[in-house]
Amino acid sequence: MLSAIVPNVATGDAGSAAPHSFDLCLSIGTLEATNDVQAEAFALRHLLRPGGLLIGAIVGGNSLPRLRAAMLAADRVEGGATPHLHPSIDGPSLAALLTSVGFTQPVVDVDRVNVAYPDLDRLVGDLRAMGCTNILAERSRRPITRRGLSIAQTEFGAGGSPTTERFELLHFAAWAPDFLTRQPGF
Image 1: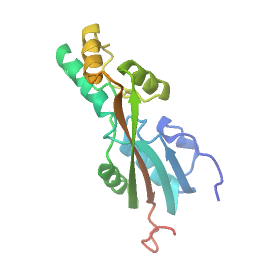
Image 2 (image 1 turned 60 degrees about the horizontal axis):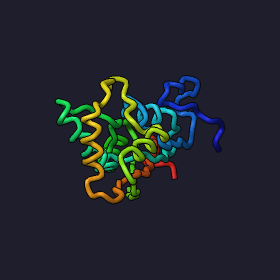
Image 3 (image 1 turned 180 degrees about the horizontal axis):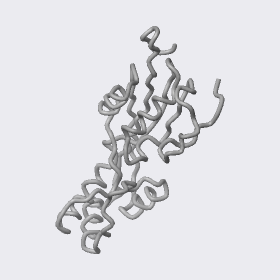
């Protein structure tokens, strides 16, 4: 039975929740929205009772390959690469991360969604509206120059017609170990 709603652990708000107090934790789009993904996963693990279940979804590391290539081309003319999107994790790495913080039997499923964009500006607008740009505290604050933007726009829309961009969604589940039976709680 769900006894309470836990504030967002990613914001450091989990202080009011006692360790091992939940049977289920949901992490939908929050695990990757932190500067320390491993610490976030560790905090979620310690909120779960033995045998508790974590279910979540995040944007995967193989998302937005056309945008990443366009921004890398822009960075080349500007004299160095800087992250323009927050880092993301791929499926096998997510399973290993969950295991490393004490979860057992992690399962990661990958969905790939292709979306057509008429131009780079529309894609960037959508990403900003979703809060999916770079959230790293230590990111570069240097804006892209007009020349760099022009290069990125050209690289992104090189085919002339709408550009298909891929979003990878990772759906995952993992169990807090039940130390008495050494099994997940099902």
